[in-house]
Length: 433
Ligand code: ATP
Ligand code: AMO
Image 1 (cartoon, rainbow, N blue to C red):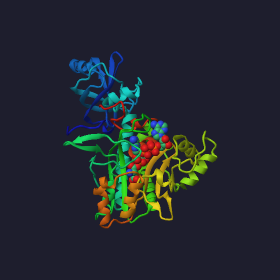
Image 2 (image 1 turned 60 degrees about the vertical axis):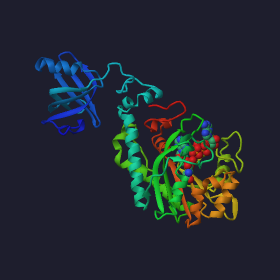
Image 3 (image 1 turned 30 degrees about the horizontal axis):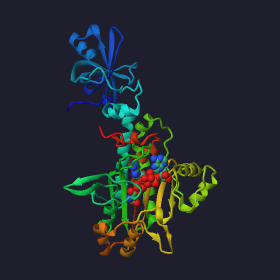
Image 4 (image 1 turned 30 degrees about the vertical axis):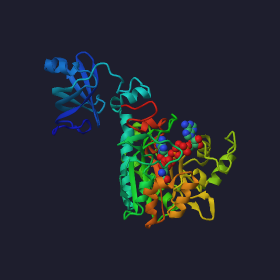
């Protein structure tokens, strides 16, 4: 519609054509209002029954809520209108009628439970505060891409149908691939590493990952989006620098470009983290968490950080922080160990006080050590030949990491459930829409 003006852009004294959804009809007797809603906001359309064409009044006030209409008319100043402007219609066309029985109320007057909202996501997203989450998610990805460009990183896309898994702790979704066993990929890990030996050197990917997590939690999905980064000729500390820069760039982008969305979500004090994120070693982290006295059972060296431990440490630190130098045995085979202490790895996690956001580390780039690492973790290096082989032909030292996008959105906006941060979540119960 070439001549369409958005609700937020109409000006008094002009004739305009607006298009959108019927948000509400308020009939006061002699006068009635149709509130039209589009992507940018709302506009009041005034119907003075005795002074206007009867057919126009009938169509305008007979239309069901959430129908799609286009209206042409003169825009006038009206201090009593919510936006200070209203339109007096010359014509109104119903482009798509809506059933009067709505499965949820997009005006937000009647609350709906999350499952109902997700079953009717199209209608749910008509609520400005729900739409705002996805505008912010889009801004996060835009600013992250811009940041990656500023650090000389090339965007790549790697296969999602693969022959092997990489992330030990989580199950794979099997599929059949022309009679052969195959899986949905859990992580771009091995492919992004293969790019380190290529001429690209420094790469990133934003893409889906699939994990057959059996459990149902507010912070796990079975299909999630990851932001992966991998760079040649850096160590794990330099990788953490980029990881921290990425998060700050995402917050800055949102602070700069999503003021309206933040306001809708009730943020008047949205803060971009500006301090350096503390880098605790794993040993310091468990000592610190034990000292809080919050755990029923003290952690001992070798334990993973439990959900309770992550929470207690989060409260104690009070902001984002890294945990570095993890015990080798709880980190994957591709993470490099310290030469002088093989029990200790160069893996790290970035934590938000509420949960883990990132895993990463310095990678094992030496062929013999890599193959030995497979064997130590009970994996068959033969199966990974497509990956290990390339380590024989000049693989530079490298490091990298991956963010879960939904967790980034969830922690940034303080959402209770990760499902709020994805349009069509996949969990144990939910396969459609
Ligand atoms: P990732 O799975 O990608 O590593 P994560 O935050 O789930 O990210 P995990 O290592 O799986 O990290 O788990 C972190 C901690 O959360 C572990 O101590 C684990 O016991 C705990 N945890 C994982 N899943 C659940 C769950 N469903 N309920 C309670 N605690 C859980
Ligand atoms: P990891 O398995 O820790 O590391 O995943 C990285 C980050 O992805 C997010 N994430 C998830 N988010 C929602 N639902 C899930 N089921 C889920 N699983 C993971 C988390 C997590 O911190 N290959 C390594 C990364 C690397 O070393 O570069 C990896 O996949 O935010």
